[in-house]
Length: 365
Ligand SMILES: *Cc1c(COP(=O)(O)O)cnc(C)c1O
Image (tube, rainbow, N blue to C red; front, side, top):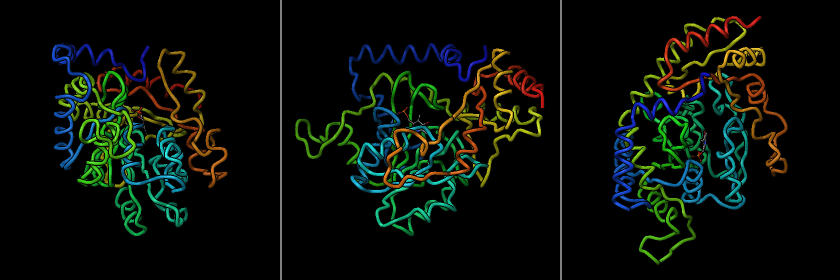
């Protein structure tokens, strides 16, 4: 079986270093926050050439705490894409704010900047662009819209660690950039974890308080916070992988190139790198009217595939009663009906990819 992602292969390659890092934390008996969290925060801030990075409990919490720190709350409207994982919009609803969905550009699967302004009202407070599958959203135009209407921008970088838009890393365009270390992400832990980056001192300070029960000085609570701390073991694991992140992303890019050169079907659209983007291929997602047939042949050949995402968020039951419900976002719905993600991870071999391409090319037209 060729899986979507093979974490066992990666662990085999990194085992001595990872085992040693975990062992050291066990011996230090320092588990919540701790030295590895502080060091990882410094390393990730430096990598992004930004002033602050704060480790939190998950990618979802990264979004939640960023929105909370930026003052998003009851009745505020937050513009985002419906073609994403639920967490992007769930956190908006958690704060009693209202997600407002804007259709996507079907070529990048990201929010379409042409359609944002028509959704802005007096209550709009923020935009959450998602760099879906590792392809950056069009940040120059999104930042310009944000400036013009005085909106906060929170980048959902959960799938895009190391991706770049016009030579600048994602996460550094908006007020906050939010990352996930969920085990299958490009930079990952062996459990839940996340990180928020920002250049604003006040926002960083607030996020630090929020993640630890609204506390700055122990047992003195200034604001209502959360328990959302990255732990020392997960940070130690992420630090080992972080040393290799550029190499891992390069392998993904090389794998994408092999897929692109060898899938030959004129009824299938392959992912492109648009608008001066560095795509880091968290997923390699194709689009085809023949999706079900391709999927079945892959499955019969012991090759995994996955549909991200089968139901866009404006069609989800949980958002059926939204204040500003939209009935139809045709690009998102069209993509949801036709996308198919193929196995993608740094350790995937050329031979495996050629085999996958072969199976796809032989599906009847
Ligand atoms: C994974 C993911 C999240 C949530 O991250 P967790 O660490 O699982 O909470 C948010 N947004 C997107 C786009 C994701 O892919």
